[in-house]
Length: 356
Image 1 (cartoon, rainbow, N blue to C red):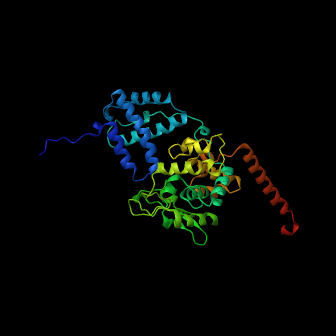
Image 2 (cartoon, rainbow, N blue to C red):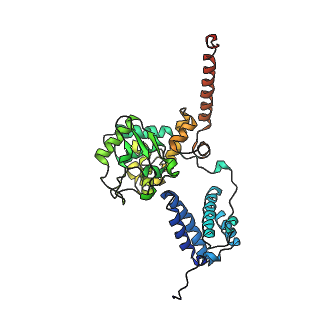
């Protein structure tokens, strides 16, 4: 019989515990979520190393309070809230495997912040989206390119970055009335945030279908991912990473694409036009900002909130709290149009012939 002692869960180093936690979460979470948790917990691991906590079994309630104080001095409350929720769920995992004392997760403080602070007002404005898409559609050189196809998909579906990244060529139905089908495929690396409930067809305008047909026929890399699937928005190596998709988004939304720099830069010499620096341009937008812009635009043009929620796979509450970034003037116009619609329906009902 071997004398080797099985390692105790409490002997895990913080870095080992995080790796174990992320492995478990990969089965049911998107790549974007994993990346976010990994970054937040990396900060916690570095802090543990800096104060000499060698194993998770050495964590005490006071340590978690100290970490809260340490992080709260450097970041915004909304960022702190996200980090502390991630840390609390991680501590719950450690409790589940017997690595820390029961109830330790309750010691992770969550800041109480105003809901309005939880989301940024940054979005791709509808006017900017219109100018960009008009430019791409009229450009001989850029029509149907990957940059163009990505922006058309992102704007007209309002989908999450991970959902667009997970589309295959087979998910684009471009004959007749075009649409794309978002599918939950966790076993091959592209889960949807809301899993099977996130599966849905999303109809596209005919011009978007034309762009995608041109992209597939002329510009799409004929590549496959590690699972043999053909990503719709593909890189030369196959399916792009989440970070690569973000870079494509920043490049696609640079205002100088249509020849205008609102920041008084000389375009040929501007570093922001380069792949490595596009995110620094104040006018470039990440996929989340495009999604926010689309949702706000759909609501502004009169789409019922529930229809918008179904199209973008989000609850009405989430849309109201995080995505609807209408200006005060746009909200007034919405109310005016609703009141006008009600007035019109009431006037049209003023007929004795309908009073039977």
